[in-house]
Structures are given as structure tokens and as C-alpha cells.
Length: 445
Image: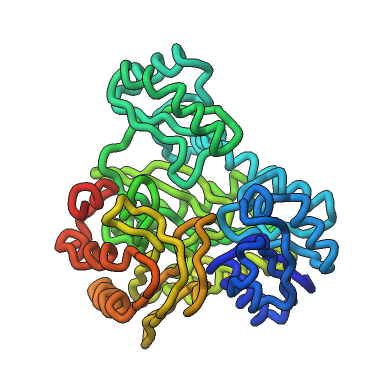
């Protein structure tokens, strides 16, 4: 690979550009009109405008992105996360245009992108799955029959879903009837696909995912788990590794299941297998994310492995140099997502100009961001503006470092969720590691 176009923006675009620079690979940043002064445009070797502020006309515009690659001579495209990262049609267009898509094949993205089909594949491979419908629901009558069979509460979920969208929990047949068409409509609006499926609702679980790397020669390794249980409305807020709820026996089982899942899917790239873990320590396959994850830095800091560089090397046809026995896990890492939002006003996004900025530093602290003093956060995109990642010798030290890091962080001119994050980090049950996906609603709000 000689030149990579990054089909994304914000901190992930900056993260990828930095990895490319260290690998001596030329980079092309794409930007919308509102992102003209964004940091990723300043760090890349070249920058090219791909449309107006609207995502649909810029960062989701296949035609303009492919044209930008042709114009700049980019031979590869890295999609980052969000936007086109899990869009099989875009990956296919890249392949047909003789441009390397840095990620799995479009066939695998399509296979794993349909959550109900992915679940059936895992079930056939003997990987534990949540009880539910076999594939997508064929109508309301079918939904009622499945729900009766597995028992309420159940979840209605968009088959092409992700990011917490297209999900409803229903506790009775009446609620199912009331929500069935609403979920189908939301699925259609969010993913242009109104297929939905049903799963048994696992009450108060942990959300634990396993990071994998898989090359084109059948080699698959796993880089340990990340606990992503601290969520608000299915959106992750704080992630950590290792999980305080997982013992070595369960950790080994889940790691083996993740490797098996990648192999059965014919996966080649970096990816994440997401599981739910119930109160009895049973784990269930939930979905596979066929891209780099927002929370990948905590795994990098704990293992010393650069996941973005590994992803690029795999796409270039290199064989994994690491075996499972070579992976060393050191200490404990926590990530907090900093959002430009107002928690006191129902987490309303808060775009605007950053008039003052101080980011934390010191041993064991990393900040991934694309903001700078004088930068104006646009109202058009996701409100996440930074990630603070800490690495300690153990969980208590990591928590203490995160407290210090949040105390040092100053972002003036816009509202942020820093105080809200600090409230979580100081919570007694968080410190004890005793929490589930309902923690925010029960303990913080």
C-alpha cells in the first residue's frame, strides 16, 4: 500500500493517519465543507472536499469518495468506524474499482451485518446464542408465536442494526403489538432495511466483547476482552479491560468462542465478537462488529499491539507474526468517552467553538482526539470529541488515574459530560466492579 484514503473524520481519522505516518504510508483526508478546518485535514498529506455538511452528501457518498481516491491516486480506503465502515455495498464498490478496502470482504460484512443470519451461523457452529427467532420475523403473528415460545420479556431488534438503534424491549403481547411496526419503521429509516428479529431479553447482563485479529492465511488470535457494560440507551460510555466480572475459566471459554466465530465466518481483518454475560456467568453471542471499534485503544495499551497497523498489514496481505501464546496482557485499562453534550438537559448535543483546552497527561494516560483550541464542533455529526485512556498496574490504580485525568481535563466554550463521567468513576458500586447494563439508570441518573 502506497497511499490510503481515510473515509472518515474526527479522532478515528486522526488515529489512522498517525498509524500510516509511522508506517511511511501517504494519506488522503476527505472532508465535508463544514470540516474544512478539522484536524484530520491538517495532518494528512492531502485533503479533498467530498461534499456539503450532510453525511448523506459527503461521508456516506460512495461516488464522491471513490472519485477522491482516483483523483489523489489512493490505492486503499480505510473506513474507520461508523459511516461506511460496515457497508457491504461500499466494500464491494471498492473491490470493483480496484481499490483495497481495509476491512473484511463485502461478503463477510453482509453475512455478519444481518444480525439474525449471523446468530444462526454461530448457533450452527455450537457457539452459545440468545434464544429467539430463527432468522428474521415474517410478520406480527410469527412474532407473537416466537415470544410465547421463549417467554417475555423479549427484544425486537433490527436485523441490520447497530449503535443501539432499532431495539425495543416488550413485556407482553400487547406491548409487542404496539411496538412491532414502530421497530420496523425505525429499522427502515436507520438502515434502509425493515427486517427485524426477536431475542429473549437477558435481564441485567454484562456486555463483554472479544477483540480478534485474523489474516488471509487462516490465522486467528484474540486480544482479550473489553467490558462495555457502562451504557446509556445502548450507547457505550466507559469501557475497561480486563472485565472485573470474568474469571480465567470463563475468559478462556469466551476467547475460544470468539476465535471459532471468526473462523466460521471466514473473517480476515480486525473485528470484535460481542457477548452478553448473565448473572449466572452464561455467555451468549450477540453480534460481530466488522470494523475497528471506538474502544480499541484500551486493548492496544494492555497488549502493546497496534490494532490499526495490524489491520492495515492484514489488508496488505501480510501474515500475522503473533501466535496466541505470544500475547501478553499487562495491567488494567479504562476508557472514558468525552462527548460535547449537556447531561442536565437530557444529554443534548452541544456544538460550538472551543475557547479553552487542557488535556491530561502523565504516565499511563493517552488521549485520542481531533479537537484543538479555536476549533468549532459542528452540529452535524456524533457528539463524541475525545477519548481518555488510562493504563494502571491494577484496576484500582487505573480508576485513580482516570479520576486525575478527568480532573485535569478542561474544555471551555461547550458543555461536556466530564462531570457525569466523574460521578460514575467515583461510584462505590463501580469501584467494586458490581454493575450491569442498568447501572446508569439505577445509580447515576
